[in-house]
Length: 258
Image (cartoon, rainbow, N blue to C red; front, side, top):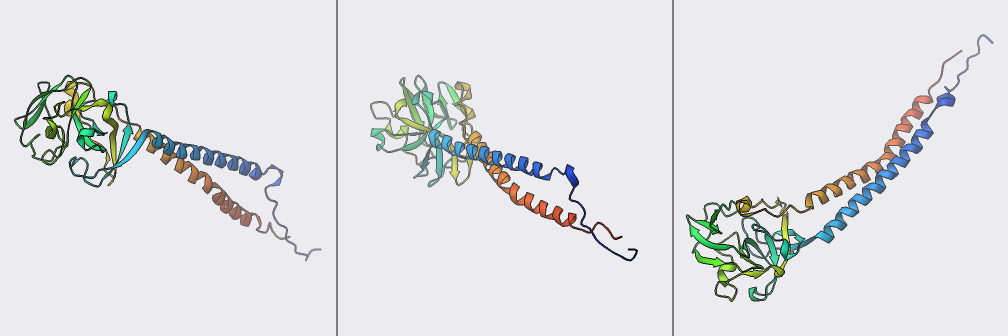
């Protein structure tokens, strides 16, 4: 009839609408992202637990590199892997038989002495040590030349004035040196406070290659990437639901009047 007025809902996309198929694909991808993210996240922590050990530094003998009370992560290494400039955790019966943290300044076969012009001398070369407290000499009192026996290490604290290190054990049978086998780990980073990875001891490069960096940065990248994937995948459902609700309101509008 001419005066009749009716309304019809507009068809929701007809037979070619691909929303449900796209939704299923999105759910699969989000599930895959969450699964992969969990693998990376948990795998990163597992890797760190295998490779690293946490330590608390009780004294200021390594200041300013590592302050008293700081928490560090140290990579488990064999003593044979230790090189000049490394900051290591070791345990020696003649050094109170408890874990200690010092810097390796000379290895087996080196000669070490101090101080001319305020600098440490290793195998005839003066060593630049920028990690020492500003304006401080390499050793306040100096010490005579020591030849480090093979298989042993000569260690100093970065706070040379208060560190009980190899210079305090010069009268020992091994001239203050420590066996490589006493090393438990090599310090890679200060995690509390968050000072990050240790400064590279470039002053020792003239005597040979430095130790390679540990895998800590790679581990952190894996953990962060895993967290992003888990959060992104988990967010897909709520975002898709909100988007679908918006499309539903648009499709429900009247198609017209006749």
